Image 1 (cartoon, rainbow, N blue to C red):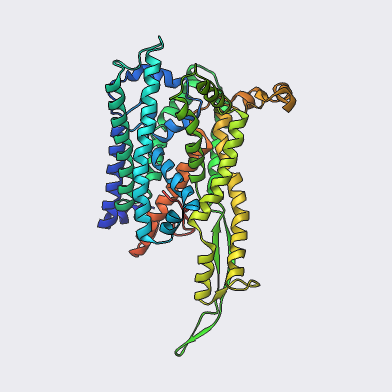
Image 2 (cartoon, helix red, strand yellow):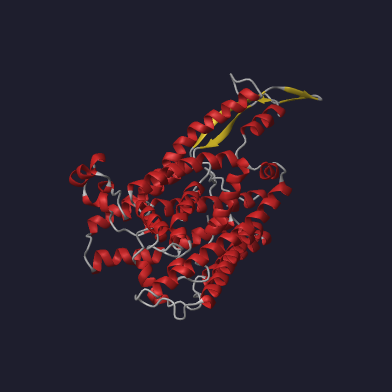
Length: 470
């Protein structure tokens, strides 16, 4: 390990990439402390603390606490991710976008340009909603979050938050192009990791200051966390291997081929992206609700809708699981083309034993991918529900009586129904991101070392990183 770390410093290009990545992450963290003009940050953080156990708490974790403090980077990378989802979904129904997706590098550049402009539009929409909501909060007789409400405040907030979101998008793209690892994933990774000291402090207060928990509970929680990490690593490195046989060929005087290998198909090809996609879509009702007046008919309907889709409510949980399963399959269809794989295997003189080359091979690969993606989707749903249970509980007791709400209330333990009030940083989603991004980054550093004839970090059992689109 020490020799491998020393080797990194001996390769100028790799050393520059790592230092550039660290510099971009440092700039991202500095921007997370620049406040938005016209906002009373202390009052806003007190109000936001009431939403810590909601979907906004998860979004604040993704932004490294910027949303909680309403800094210039409050929107984070979520507008960019939402824009990517919209364009990918439109690619299914739009012939123009579908054609661009098949045009290779030139098409990808054009789609990236569209994604950037759509990110600007979504950032302006979300920042305008935040500004309007803050003004309503200030004029309602409560704590004055906005010092000087008015059109100037709305304009400055829209410009500030939109510029911050675009700058974060630029940072992620620069890390991907000139640094090491995937830029967008590393920004989320950094936002989670910086919150670990605070989470550890919260645990210390619960055990040694307020005596809310005893040491046995702390040990159980730590053991649970280690078990989740082990489970995530096991599944992330899990793969289904399809055997491939290559026929013998005579090239000149040499006999080539005649070897057996395998086609690795990962259980979780999409990584954490299906969860992030699902979270992005679930934020739309909250964003729309910021514009609506609760006294109007439409506002009343939206308010009721938001109550049904509140964090931890049964309808929210069911929708969350369905979206994760959908995006697990949808994202796989974008990053993996069975027809192309089957064509490449055929061109190289290979075949799957018992399966005819061509269309039959593509159908077989697609069938195997579909089956293991169901397993991967269930795994992601289980991991995503861990923070929900730990914070908000399942709340199945809120179901109507005819669906068994009263029975759940009397037969289920309180901690399962109402949560344990444990911080997000110990949830499955955050651990999945941290472990997955760390494995990806180490795998890319290893690839750089091996390409230059250096040993990787691990001489046995190379780390196999997951595929990710960000």
